[in-house]
Amino acid sequence: MIDIEDLNVTFHSAGRDVRAVQNVSFRVEEGETFGIVGESGSGKSTILRAIAGLVPSASARLEVNGRPAAHRRSRADRRMLQFVFQDPYASLHPRQTVDDILREPLEIHRESAIDERIARAIADVGLLPAHRFRYPHQLSGGQRQRVAIARALILNPPILLLDEPTSALDVSVQAEILNLLARLRQSYSLTSILVSHDLAVVAHLCRRIAIMQLGRLVEIITADDLRSGAVKADYTRRLIAASRGFVRASA
Amino acid sequence: MSGELLVVENLNVAFPGRTSVTQAVRDASFTLGRERLGIVGESGSGKSTTGRAILGLVPRPGIVTATTMSYAGRNLLANTERDWQELRGRRMSMVMQDPKYSLNPVLTVGRQISETCFLHLRTSREDARRRTLRMLEAVQIRDPELVYDLYPHQLSGGMGQRVMIAMMLIAEPDLLIADEPTSALDVTVQNEVLRILDDLVRERGMGLIFISHNLTVVSSFCDRVLIMYAGRIVEQCAARDLQNARHPYTRALVAATPSLDSPRTELATVTRDPAWLQ
Image (cartoon, rainbow over all chains, first blue to last red):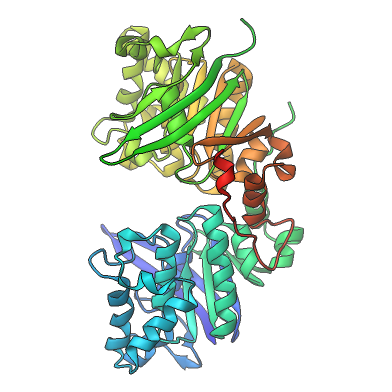
């Protein structure tokens, strides 16, 4: 479904080159939820942006849905991939109602039966019809993230890119959103990539997980490897140990 | 007085609004010795407001009332603004969540930290510099001389948080309130910062209130934990018993957290019971 070989992303800033992603290769099968974890600056979000064509990238191969992704994406290319971002407060237009937010992608892609599809998308993500004409500031953080997910799914994309979708949410709300994502990937038969710094969240939703460090892919492991600690790289081991909580050095 | 550093009984914080009063903290009672006390809860549960109330930092028009609020035998409720200024920074201080917003962007790190020395310890310029460098070293900044002359935007998140801790600890307070000190940091850096706080509690016998929403961090780092829900302390327990907590809210929070050790196909969601507020 997604096939990446030797992906490189380099940013030029103030006369120096920052190699944000270096020689990263992986494949995501149809229907899979692939996880990418790493610390800040590891390039995990940049990979998603490169797949979506939001940053210029160079690669030996970058195939999305069996077709090479062009540098200039057509409208048909763009509707295959939809994005959910970290901050539900920043990713919704404050002067648009939920109805406006969900209507826009349908109009851009000249869809029909717009009103019914908005109503269905709202119901699919567990919001009530009463939420349809609210503004983002009238919704809680969890409800806003549901709107962002509804906006991503309203075009029935085969691929969903999730960039830290629950990092800004409380645990109880995170649980609701993770359950929602687990349910929707079934009903929409989605292939998705989930980027997060939280190993437990990634292990919860994904079977295969890529570990990133400083722009490089350290290794690809399974969620079971992550839980049992059967990993090869030292960095992965350190990351797992750190996310299991604080260990007091025996004095 | 060997036992309690801080005694709080029936603390209430209310914010009067135009039409109604928001009760941010309701009848919170707890004590703190020379230990690591965690406060966990979700956003809006009153954990930060509790920390601010202890330092007399609840902003207007907030109203703080309590039957007892004493620090090392001293009644905090009778404090004037002048008394607070003597206490804050010197005897008790607070580390905020995000170094980006809590450091002054136009002053160098060294100047910000040494300011505390001038204010509270009335030291000379050279002495303040020496203490500052030593403190930066204590929070494991590799090249204190270099960092002394840097501006906050030149620091990484983990370094910024260490600078904040250095600033708060330079006057050697007995009580430190750390409000989500590691939430903006990467996990590996987070544990380094925790280790620094841990050493300070053990070596200086400091009392630490550690406010966090992260159950994993709190249960592995603290001695005792208070769980707050809608302004109320619903449960107090030993940190290591958090997994076997009794209150339905605490249990729901634990069950809603994805865990590496106990995989679940579906996460439990929290059903809120109005009776928890009684």
